Length: 244
Image (cartoon, rainbow, N blue to C red; front, side):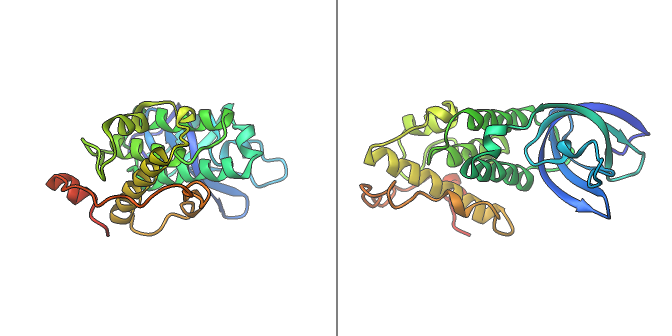
């Protein structure tokens, strides 16, 4: 896993993905604060008396105690302390699907064993705000744009004639404050979503399982006029926005 000598360490992490393994174990992909994305095994959690089952649930945030054996690609979770399981998200299907979408994006767009506190805090912020505020149409594209920037794929300037002020809000404002209602604002949200779609088409090898539920609804776009033909972009922006 870390290619070091046998060691035990603790780290804060958020579960991105889980999978049953053998008869009673589970495997998880965990995005951690200090070690980036790592793969771990939780032994025996599928048994009736499994004590670590909560630590393997998607988007669970906890401090994990991990044993890493020299030469192994998998660490083993031996204990920990739960920080939050985000109960309000789990009680609402739309919020839960959006949280799973954020986790899948982190899973697909982050390399293993490369720490990025910025990405960890971005995911934690999104889940925390989603726990206490209902999702808006801008929530998903705002998260994707910020993850793109943190991963080195962000655009220096807005494209598709999105105004600099709106572009800045999508990158900097609290997710829960991104509530838009005018036709112009909803059109800009739609353009941001198109930027994200083109990026994912180019850089993600196969479709995201969680992407479809977060399109703007017909009601959201009822008063939105078609976007004018975009002005000529810079070569760098044209490359980033090339449709796969």
